[in-house]
Image (tube, rainbow, N blue to C red; front, side, top):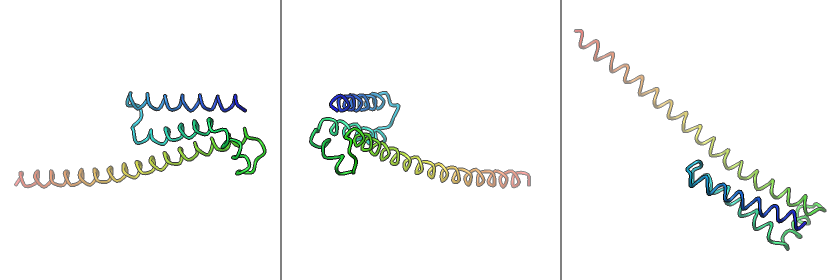
Length: 122
């Protein structure tokens, strides 16, 4: 069990380091990195808090602590992915609205160009 928690701690530190390097190199925006950093910190706390590791299996109704840690870790990442899905959906809606506004502007410009062209011919 201790080895699994050590691996989990190393994984969470690597995740936090990867996120921080990605933010520094501008591969990921700061507001999107927050959920990954929170997940890494949550996993690090979970891997270092032995008393909590012993209590979680009873709370979620499983007999094996390793399975409980896997379930909790999976739950943390599902929450992060859900948050990122919400952000992507919002960005898609914003893109659609922007495209519609651009199409309206383009139509108005073409109409104005036609009016100028026809009034210039008279």
